[in-house]
Structure formats: C-alpha cells, structure tokens
Length: 318
Image (cartoon, rainbow, N blue to C red):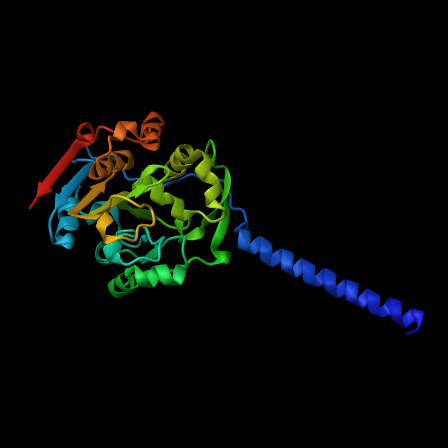
C-alpha cells in the first residue's frame, strides 16, 4: 500500500473509531439517566389541611376495595383530592418480579380501584408508574398492576431512558438527581406503598417508596438511607398516601419470595400526613415508630407527626 493511501485509510479509520466512541459515550450517558435540566423546583402536591377531618384513617376489611373506600371517605372522599381536569400520577411499588401473593409489590386491586376513582372524579389523565429494581416489563406484568391500571382506564407507563429530567431536589444529601418526568409533570401525586420489612431501613412504607421516582444509581443512597428518604419526602410530598397493608411482608424484605414471610392483615391506610402513615404502617411489622431512623428524622424535619393519634386518627373495623 502506498504511503498516501495508508494515511488516507488510517485517517478514515480514526474518524470512524472516534465517531463510534462518541456514539458509545452518548448511549452510556443516556443509560446513566442524566438528561435535560429543568428549572429548580420543589414538588409539593399536598392539599390544605381540614381541621374537621382526620389526617389518617385505617380500615380493616376482607373486601380490600371496601376498605379503601372507607378510609377515603373518612378523609373527605376522592373529590377532596382530585379536581376535574387534573393530571394524576399514582406511584405504587412495582419494584420486584413477584406475584401479588408474595407481598413485595402493591396490591393491584387497590391500584386499579384508585385509578378508577381518580378518573371518576374527573382527572384528565391518570398515569401509573414506578422505576423498578428488577426488569420493568416483568415487574409490571407479574405484579398484576399493569393489567389492573389499564382495565381501570389509566396508563401504565414503563420508564424509558429519555423520560428522566435532571432535577434539583434541594436536599441535604440529594441535590441534583435524575427524576422520572411523570413525577414532576403532574398536578397530583398519590403514593401507594405496601408495608414491608427492609434489610437496611427496617421498614419500607410511604416515604421509602419515593425512591421509585429516581433514576441513576440509587444504591449509592443506601450509605445514608435515612437522610435520603427524608430528602425525597420533602422534595416530593404527595397529595395522598395510600398504604397497602392487606398483605404485609414480615421478613426477607424488600424482595420477599416466601409466602411463609407474609401476613394477611386486610387493612388499608389513607393519610395526608406521610409521617403518620409510616408510623402506623410500621406497627404492622411490630416496630416502634420512634425508634426508626427515617421516621424520627422526618418528624424533626417538620414533615409530619409520629404520634398519628395526635395528628387525627380514625380506625374502622368491619
């Protein structure tokens, strides 16, 4: 090969390698979840407190839909929370490739009914979504949540790389972080966790469930898990917390697997105070709320009350 031809071909190869490397870098960055950066914004989806209504209610009923209705009615009904024309995002726990019986994900019956109620109240759009830990398609299908949400008329949206925004969370630990855009671009947020044991935080209920709004390497947050949970709860305060305590994962959380670790408790909690919701939910795990780091820190940060009875509590046993 002549020297000129060699230089020409080598140059072309170099350019191709550079282009390929740039493309690879582009896709690598997309995978990391860092995309366009919106203006700093604190997401607060809460509604005004009504002194005549409790901030938290619990209903126990083998009919889980009936239990949900009773707790909602105790807090003023769905129309207190959702106005006609509003966009609503429902955030269940869909994190794991598990069946409903294994109690690692939120009860799909409750998710479907909540979606139906929001649509009935006049919501313009209802989205059900979560950033899963296991494969999203498998989690959405095996949990039963995709089918239940779509049957109710909601959109069950799997997270995509291009759906994250780089947001300023304004926390002590959590500052700039990729957030799934559906949790920013909405009018109301309904947090629907399940009560579970957790190997690091001792329990995962409402505030910990908000980890599922984040992209990026969430496992990095486990080093200071209590502070990261509270940062999230402050940034993304929900309109309503609906706690699934129909089945409770007593051990082996958060993934679960064995039915021997599941207790059937047939209870639903609705709350406008997310700290009170977690405190009451923790009792299903035989935990003392004021000994759980993130719940104590959340109260100290002014996010709610551990003493849920003082916050205003109603219990309905059918």
